[in-house]
Image (cartoon, rainbow, N blue to C red; front, side):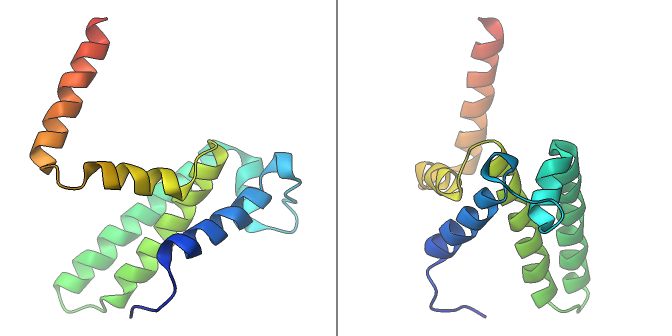
Length: 126
């Protein structure tokens, strides 16, 4: 299932295409699905993210009972794609997400979550 294509390069290339579809970059909603979603506003692509996340869950649950595991990959690809549309809309890049994952590397998930709660409480208190 894996390929020799570098994932960060593939994500960066896809991000460039998505960014080219932004309204401010001349994205044509009549010619591009991405441009259409972006033109419709955040509710459109956020709804798609929710739908795709649900489909990931359903594919995983199916795999638990003998279903085709490749459907998980297909659904995650759809989810990531729509998340990349959101990133572009908000002026962010996949590299920002990768950097955050790298920042978290080596940190216990339990510790990370506890730290975020403490920081949120401190932010609420100020």
